[in-house]
Image (cartoon, rainbow, N blue to C red):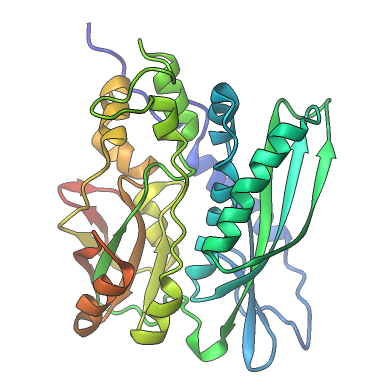
Length: 334
């Protein structure tokens, strides 16, 4: 009998319901400051922008999510701090902003100094990679609410107002540059964990073709796309997309125009292993995971090769902007 295909919604995360919940909150959260520090964007982009005169202050918040449960299983917590930093600063980069400061929030069921120190090691490394200062944070003991721990944070960045990238300049004919991820990053783990836990494998089994375990592969920290700082200085960047939860559907956040992806990046082996173990449909994989591509840059055709060089090894032109639709190879993701 063929194994039932698993989906993100069946594992407990319904992207469409989450979007409806966000929309419900946005309808209420309408209060806006007047004068200096007034908002420049509405809720819903990767980060919020505040008007600071000649420049804008960008602000965003995010967490590690259920990836921390794998860290707990392996008792290896020294990389989740990188994930926490990355999920925030990558959203700042998506507006062309450069990160400058961060505060973390660590909520625990029970205080564990050794675990806290390991988490701090990752936070420090993430701050180093993004050239940012951790200016403070909060630790809360919440035994009646938290099981294990939860790690989140808030980052702020700066950008000259004329250098802000919101997607307004995206035009039909612009090219898409795909930038590799380091793996799953910090999204889709509710589905990934269910796949492994319902399979014949464990987090401690060897990842095929490697010398490390499946759990260690899943803990590979999220890539920090610090190259974006140089990119916005050297290229005419029209759009920037951080590919996180909901996969390629994140492209919808930067433009109402269409995206045609004809040359997908090759996903890392962990994605295909999860797909095979969970019998996950190809379109569901691309709607849930980054599938080996953690960032997409939109530039005019004449800047494409320069953008690929700046963004580094494995970056390449994957497609172009069209009038409508979202197509990845043979997959229509609308």
